[in-house]
Length: 109
Image (cartoon, rainbow, N blue to C red; front, side, top):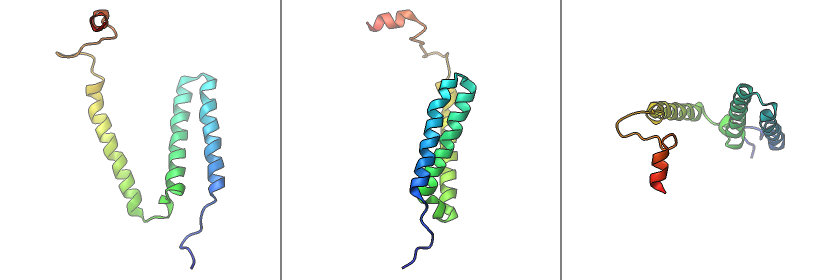
């Protein structure tokens, strides 16, 4: 019985993931915040792709699986960006900033 596709070299992919992990850990040591954030998210996307494509076998599935994955990520973005303005709001009728307002902290004690 033959497989429809050849199995990838999982050890090689694992070493790629370890190398990317080392880069993402070493990145903050440069102490450049913008570069650290860009490289951290870039490396995270590449690592997520490697895990999803090879270890979850999405690379060998039909295109409908990728379509569903991208659709679910878009829906996640809609939920995140749809609620972010409310979560980041710093004023309103019922909104209390307990960190800036010292009396709020004292009332809890």
